[in-house]
Image 1 (cartoon, rainbow, N blue to C red):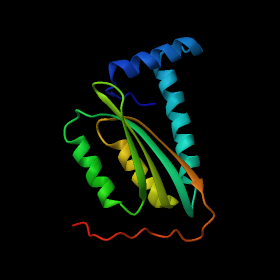
Image 2 (image 1 turned 90 degrees about the vertical axis):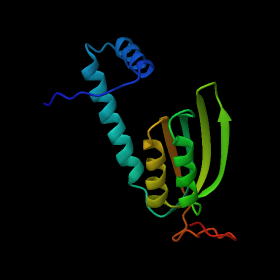
Image 3 (image 1 turned 135 degrees about the vertical axis):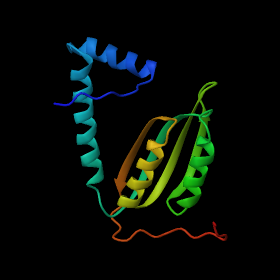
Length: 147
């Protein structure tokens, strides 16, 4: 077993501590290991999907995080063929939530969603993928180019 150091926001650590107490864990390491295993198992199940799909990507982010909004817009422009529509919601003074409908090849959708969720400043993210049964997803075309 290895000892590591990680940085966790105070409010997230408070949630972990509350969950540990409610579930009867003896220490933080035990619950963090179990949460990591559960997350890896879920990730493994989610990434096994292939073929065409539609998906809902939901994430909450700190709108004041340095250049995050700019980076997110650049990511979406770089993957305009996957994103169908986005709803932006102001949650409070610090947080925004975005919900995006995606459509395309499951591997591409998963890769894009994972990249958005992993951006620094994104506090929570989840993607729900639904297979469409199409063997080959159709790309969307629009009238301008991205450089």
